[in-house]
Length: 399
Image (cartoon, rainbow, N blue to C red; front, side, top):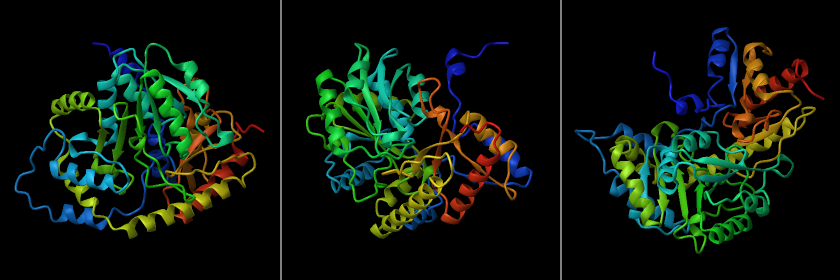
């Protein structure tokens, strides 16, 4: 029979989703599974967005413009302006989720074999996107001991080669929850200008910044008009993961021209998703206040409780709703599967994402896991209790 392509064989399985069959099997055995493995918030979608679905009165669900509905792009540009991001609606390309925005950016900015530098741990699908585009990821390792702050610029300098075309950051970061400071972003700006690179910033979690610190977008970095690309999405901001609407934002017209050709090849972003996305821009400020307060409470609770467990270290995230935690275990892939296959406490268990899948450097993340504190505090309490009990009896516990 015909063989599978090398690309298909090399495509990594998602560390976030690959354990789903084990979770499903556990549920069939009657075990309650607390899902801390995936960033699917239980926060309600804004009512204005739900109303847009309920009251949709179009007679035909048509293709949209390949760049997205002009009314949506204009409204989005106006929304960005309130955050100091000054772009024209023609500098916004609506995409099928933030994922497509990253793919289009890689396709447009890099040739197969070119290199992109990304601080690790990073969102696991960056690996998949790079493989699809034929781009080589060059990781720069950040450290859990300092909360996964930006590694020293000297480490970036060492990694730059003639094939380096871009640096990419996620801010606030998935999976670590780290929020890059203005100073760190200025350092990246200077480095990008020095070596004539692109700076790609995944900013889909910018509404989730804690401790009174405001998010600073790469689109506001002076001098990067032809270098910066911002990736955006409605998924987490409005708890609309299934809508699949994102955006590629840049002032570089060549990137926009190239990305539009890819956008034309896939015809158009989801039409109904754009209806929801545009309506969501009218979400009242009170919604975000409630969401912010809820995530602050969840973060403070879960991080404090995790750090009470012997052998566990959990740095406090400054943004998003994730944390990478260090565990007293031999192998996080084995442990996370064991939690679902062989363990339960009072007929309950917890599902984590092994951190090894968030690193590009082989062997890293083996004693770490990512959690998403997207559940109510009562559920988080039970999940942490399950984890604490599991660590008492896990055969591969390491002191």
